Amino acid sequence: MPSLFSRIIARELPAYIVAEDEQHIAFLDINPNALGHTLCVPKKEVDKLFDLSATAYQDLMMFSRSVAAALKQVVSCKRIGLTVIGLEVPHVHVHLIPLNAMEDATFKKKVTPSKEEMQNLTQQISAAFKQ
Image 1 (tube, rainbow, N blue to C red):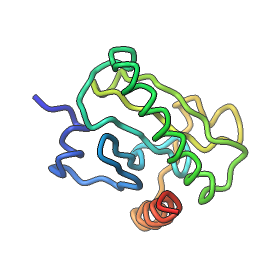
Image 2 (cartoon, rainbow, N blue to C red):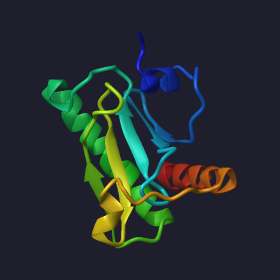
Image 3 (cartoon, rainbow, N blue to C red):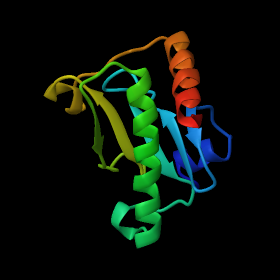
């Protein structure tokens, strides 16, 4: 059965997609730690980060770096944090989290942006990514 992320990639489920290339997709987390919390996902479904080939791993990190740069242009924060946990969805994904304090990275502090805020962020980050 395809993962939740594979279903987003196939456009079977909606998502706030901010960036995409041939091998990856990035979309806003629907349960974000901070405004702009974004997931970067390889389109090929692989469960664990270190099961990716060396090339696929490097490509995911380079894609995540580009998305983080776009995110930093749009969301006011001290830095963009990166974490890989991967326990909830069995499909490799990188969390990019705008950080202003350590608690922003704890996965306990959550924000609840409106649909309008999510749509606006999607447009702004997508535009910054394409620059």
